[in-house]
Each structure stands twice: as C-alpha cells, then as structure tokens.
Length: 198
Image 1: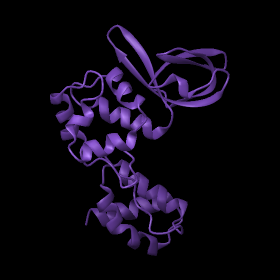
Image 2 (image 1 turned 60 degrees about the vertical axis):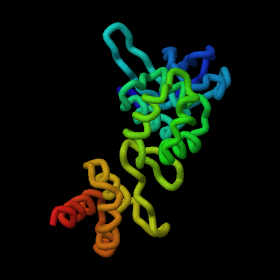
Image 3 (image 1 turned 90 degrees about the vertical axis):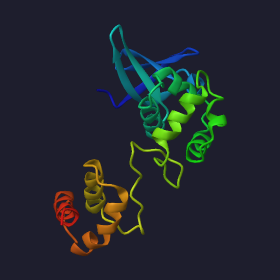
Image 4 (image 1 turned 180 degrees about the horizontal axis):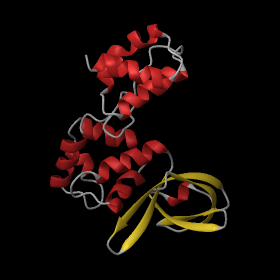
C-alpha cells in the first residue's frame, strides 16, 4: 500500500522510529533506528504487513534494503523481525556473499537463524544477486553497455523485466531495439515483446 514516507523523524526508540508526515506520526519498525537523527527530514521506504491481530510498518534506509527484506520474508521460517535482525548489521555484501557461497555458518550468526533456516535461505535466494552486490526481487538490473541509452529505451526494458522476462533474455534483444530508434517506452515495449515472442 505504501512505498515510502517522506517527512521528519520525531522520535527514536531502540525498535522503531516515528515519521511525521503532514502532522500524522507513523510508527515504523526499522533494522537500526540510530541511522536516523531526531528532527531529521528523511524519506523512509516502507512495507506494510497486515496480520490477524496487527498492522505494522517496516522501514528501510533505501530501496535496495527493502528489496532484500522482501526476499528474506519470502523464505519459509523468516518473519519480518528476523529479516530486520539480518539487515541490522548493514553488511549486505557479506550477506550476499554468504548466500552465493553457501556459507551456512555466517547466516547462523543472526538471531533465531538455525542451520535448517540458513540452508533454506541459501536454497531460495541463491542467484538473486548482481555483480554490484544488490539484491532484486528475483531479477537483476539490466546491464548498460554505455551511457547512450535513451530514457524511452530504458523504460521499455524495465517494463519487459516487470512482465517477467529475465535480464539475460532482455540483453539479447537490446541492441536490436536500439537500432530501431523508437520515440516512446510503449513502442520499445511492443517491439521488445515481438522480438521475445518470435
């Protein structure tokens, strides 16, 4: 429902922060509240999780941290609080390396993460990382060959990716699309679909 809150940090607790947006204070559980300062203007990315007896907002310093969280809670046995505990260390590259290298020992250092859950994290999330060390929602960003790609082309490629096409599939048709020199993201999307469904 919410993507982010853009407001002022009015309260910091060991487990959460309060973000004031236009006079409404939102209680947001975060991995490390002390990354923020009271009175600071901040954009906090959030995920709302609704359960039978509660509604909670979980907050993230940036969009990549939110994506890591969403991947973690997709793993059986990992709840929102466990995912926040994993994010609290801020060693995201270490987390990524552990998952990519099947390092169960590293993962079991986190609270309430036993060997079985660590193995499940590796099984479910291995391969969902980019060379830059960022995690995405099951997809890697499309690599750019140079800085000459038009915004329309990039938007078209992103739309193809959101439809479920893999970065590898999209990269294969990218040069063909660039040669067409189209004038809108919609045109690139349509042309890309034609190439991908041949």
